Length: 116
Length: 113
Image 1 (spheres, helix red, strand yellow):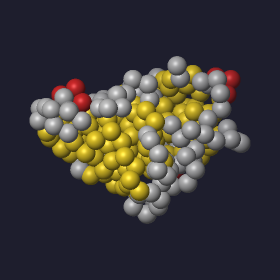
Image 2 (cartoon, chains in turn cyan, green):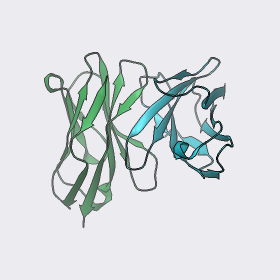
Image 3 (cartoon, helix red, strand yellow):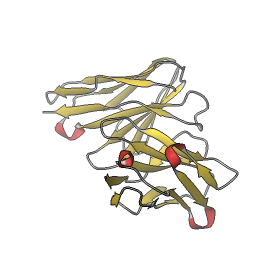
């Protein structure tokens, strides 16, 4: 089946630093990828839609300048958490559909971010 | 605002018991419906999905779900659970054909051997 990877799997950083998380589709091309955030014992919340070749679209309440998204190629999207603070600590998950966006999506394993 | 509600937060069953997890959504437009499972330490995997057609859909590992439009529901069922079904289950709704998923709160299923 289709595989989506994320790197790193976990990261610990100091408050005020920036952290980059990569999402790769390993065996298919994805013009669209999605970024979710999951708090402990809670559900996934959609943050933004990453579009190859154009700007990302963000969900209401998500700070564009805080969470920078770059869809550099058809197999790579990056999420950069800028000037991270402890409240940004969370589990970040990406997903990508191998075909049309309304079809099945494949999820990455997630990245655990801890900001000290 | 659109929302997805899963009624059961934590379910504990013995092996061979029947399972039904409730899922209701609030969205008046066209929806695509999904159930995802997250086994301990693993990523989300698709159990089953409903786009159109027969409202009773069958998924992997013996799971099925029924879409009842009048009730805005998409409940997940399995006649006989196994210990290996212990996992977190998420119901999700896709708004139209946007690709954007709205997830329910999740249900933790614990199956006792």
